[in-house]
Image 1 (cartoon, rainbow, N blue to C red):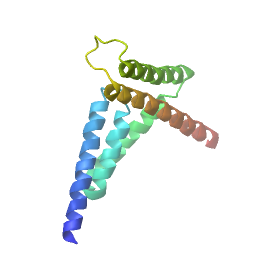
Image 2: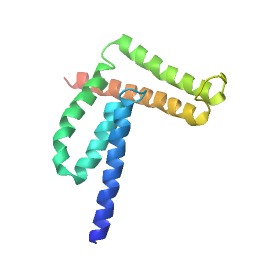
Image 3: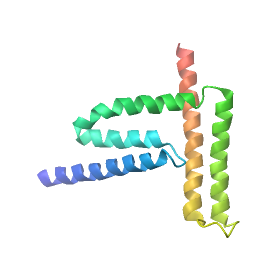
Image 4: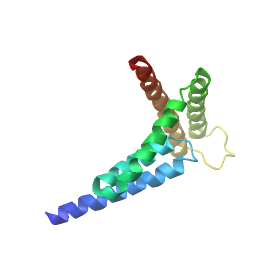
Length: 137
């Protein structure tokens, strides 16, 4: 049974570490960086309790960022347009409309499309969360 626990622990460490690294990359690339870092920290903290002290500060910043993204109608529109732009870039890259671009094809385009869909999903989630908080207050 001890070997099974070790395999689980190593697997969670790898998955959590990858999520944290991907989230850090997404802080500068298109995507929900802080939320992915938070997911990685939650996975790691489930096996390594010493990391729990980092979860709350990251969660607070991620939730603040989510709320800020829907603070005004202008931000909602701009966030929605950013998601639309990511999807459009993904389609252009996927269809290889501009052959001179160095990175093209569906392998790259699909990541942009997925990022755009994530932006829209997070925008809707953030809006509903803020709206529910305002109704409860």
